[in-house]
Length: 272
Image 1 (cartoon, rainbow, N blue to C red):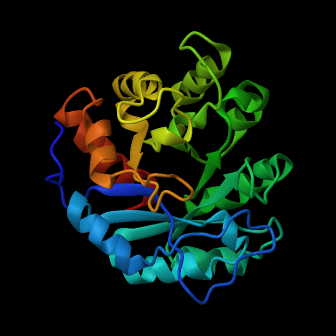
Image 2 (spheres, rainbow, N blue to C red):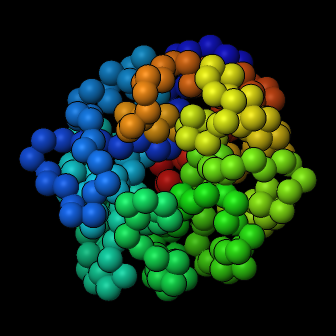
């Protein structure tokens, strides 16, 4: 299946960012974000045929989740979110965020991230009773170093952007093997998204990342997700949202897998 818009109203974009005027950037912000209000994302949803969305807290807003919470409210019942939460956040704060649609905590282990590795296990224990996940972005080449920790987490683990291997990694190499062992655990999910973040061969085919996407979608269709990564911060030229979705759909093994990845898996993971 390669048709866009997709035919399922419950299809979900599992990773997008919203930037609105009036929300100050944190001192740790690494770039000036583009204008990307929730109202503009609604048009993306319409074009792609997506009814659900996961708003991911941008690194630029630090621990201030107000813009993300406002975007969830604007996008309505079909929206959930991923927050960045201080390790000492109170139980009352976690409940408030849950009521606002938050369903996970973002760990960005690249530039701009705020939460270090040594807080992850305790954070996971705190959010597991809420049904939340740890949303992890890293250079996938670091997976072997942290695999034991990630295997111990008592909540679901979601890895961004095809594990974002920021260097050559072949299917038989240890970093990809570590990813597969995590997927084999039954508690790890992966977003088949944003190939431009790590591809060395480039658009439009992203051939090196395409091979990984096709393999993961065939081997683990029950725990793969799709995401736009809208508004594609710092990517020039801006990629086509329709083109990225069609690229991914063309790599999934069949229509059943497409529906599972776009509809069923997000519904299970994020509690729709």
